[in-house]
Image (cartoon, rainbow, N blue to C red):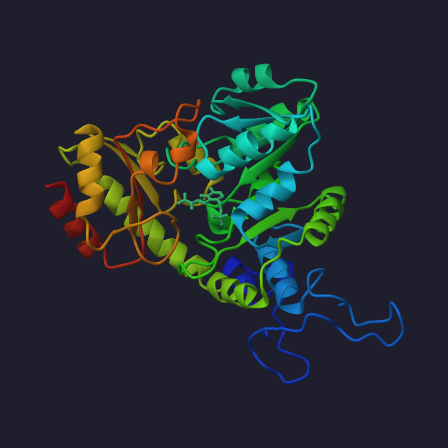
Length: 380
Ligand code: P1T
């Protein structure tokens, strides 16, 4: 049986992680060496200089690529560094399409950093395939998809978007941060690129910032690995170790995140202070049918619109105790935030602007009764 036939959890624990040949160590060593000795110029054991390649990083790259069912994996110093490598492949005059709902930092990178360098963008509701097709121009190079989206938890049909984009020769990038490879494999649904903020569920413990790109196409892998080395936004060996350690339990953590999120969403749906719950696991969610088809489970993120508007949302996020008020998501501890003043401040006054009454929950893996009791006392 080859590693490719293994189940998800076996791949998470073993792919790229053979016991150390020199010592038999069961976990991948943190290789701190910045350079590797050569017998003669160019004659080495696969490693030359640690920015270019590092054994701890290679283990992580093979492991996460294995989880995404990808031929190639590339680790970066942050999710934004990974995104920068992708947007940076475009030239002045090129055009990119993103959703009307996306992480604020992704919008900021495309609009503020690359906008100044002549890259143009349009924002489209990705559920509307006619609008997507109409937005594609001869200069369009990439379509960026988040699904579920941050922070509205809309679900985008990856296969349908890939068909529409590919009909015009446009590449599809899917940010798989919210779903993780445990719940969704975009490359198998036709995406060209998967990008992650590994700071979130992949790491899972709020102690490492990282990014990841997974691709099957050799041309993309070659270009991106050139950029990874040439620009040098690479993770440290210690960060790679932390990520490898986190990924080993991704499957068991995600199952608990999903159980807890479903219970939290159902609780909020029955709460009089809540105007609307946004969670793909609820049957009345507009993306429920697509989510059921393309995701194994609906995930660990839940958002809701507070019936009392901005002031009530502010009060609620400040009143929880088990849910900590903080940016970020995807770790063992539950977090709560108000996107319009926190993670999504940079989309204000843009087509991606967020309702100030919106509250986002990253549901952790604590005891569910404690999470529900905390929401009960905070929402009143
Ligand atoms: O923070 P960093 O590792 O650089 O990743 C950026 C990023 C990319 N994509 C998505 C979907 C994200 O959610 C993020 C980071 N998001 C938060 C910090 C947040 O609280 O939403």
